[in-house]
Amino acid sequence: MDADQFRQAAHAVVEQKSLQTELPNSAPTHSEPWDAIQADYQNLVLPRMTDWSSPGFAAFFPSGTSYPSMLGEFLASSFAGSMFSWICSPAATELEEVVMDWVAEALDLPTSFYHNKPSSKGGGLIMSSASESVITAMAAARDRALEAIRLKDPTVATCSNWRQKEASNFVVFGSETTHSSVMKAAKVLNLQYVTVPAPYSNDFRMVREQLCQELESSISNGFIPVFVAVTLGTTSTCAFDDLEGIGKLLDDHPLIWGHVDAAYGGNALLLPEFKYLSPLLRPYASFTVNLNKGMSVTVDGSCLFIRDKFDLASSFTCYGSYLNPDKTIGGPQSLKIWFVLRSFGLEKLRETMRRGFQLGEEFANLLKDQQDLFEIISGPRLGVVAFRIKAPSSNGSSETLHERSNRLTLQVCQDVNASGQAFLTGCTIGDFYVIRMVTTHVSNSPASIRSILGLIIQAASRGENATCCKPSSV
Ligand SMILES: *Cc1c(COP(=O)(O)O)cnc(C)c1O
Image (tube, rainbow, N blue to C red; front, side):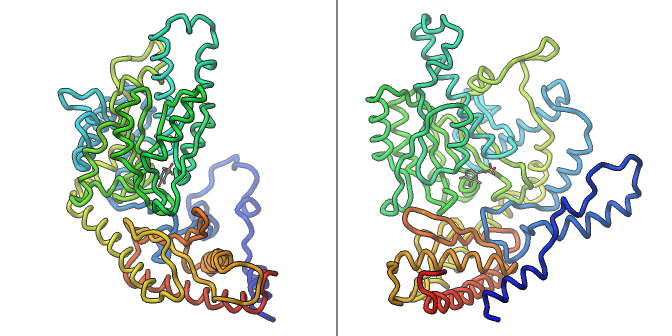
């Protein structure tokens, strides 16, 4: 039995049946005792959950939790009620406004993103996800552009489908490394999406010049740009797009809605060393940060800050006669953010974040100690390192070294994940297949990143041997 046969056999031995085959097809007609429910939860559900708080978890971005956040969730779920308007529970709206202003201040956001500043028309809202944030912002952008067209020439609005007709020329811009939720939002809203290059030579960032080229070419082809998504901390390499340069471009194109997707990276604005980014946000109409990715808040903790709440209201308001149109909506989700901010205090949150970033530096240094085996493609940045395993120089196969390195990296990533001892994300970025190591998860520590590296090295040596023995047939 060789290693591959062993792996196959081992999978067959331990293979789990899915929950669908373990659970009955129908809900019980009569009440069941709690003991039975608890036992099934313990025996059937828990073992099938991926443990995001395991020290070996280094995939995706963190999705934190903490005792104060759990308490917030617990208490929030103790309210019966649907919070579709201020009148449903005034404290829900009011607490959300207070807490969102706390967050805006902690991140040093421009005053236009506050609820309660004299000159501000904006404010923050808690959303279920960054994906929901971006589709919300994009719908508001579309409607703002339609309204601008109608104001300029009221005759366009004479036929009943004028909105669809005008919007068919609208274009949304994002880069090659923009999160898929932006393209998905464009698809749902039936808007065209243009992909701006963000090549390796720019460290996978979208820069002003390249966006500018795409904008001009769209405009000269008769399209109307309405939305640009700028990312602070891309998902694959945590790259920061050219916030400043693109911001200046927005000043020349007032119809374009600039949205900053800082789902992960936005949390870093809590640290003094990242505060230089805050004033650069001024030309942007909206900004999203997921506190669940950096501040020990449980999902959902996505905050959408918007410069002009009127844009949202005009896009999303369809009031029934029984509602009060003067007040915005808030949910009890703000409880957990409130509890977290108060229980930890900003300084403690900063400390935790710095520790995660520091681990990223340490991990990158460990990779650099083995330059013959590893190649860092991007990072470390905010605890994210994207790297590749170097394949041995030649084994007579027809594949190039570059291709073999990509294939070996994919194989190592799959191997480590199959071990069940660690969980890494692999992804294609430009021409590279990389492993993305993320060191900001709750249980990552100097010991855990070393043991993950150990697993990677073991898998790499197994993979190299396999590559030598069986060239292109794998
Ligand atoms: C995680 C992430 C998203 C998606 O976040 P959800 O809250 O899961 O929708 C979007 N953009 C970036 C840059 C992200 O890191």
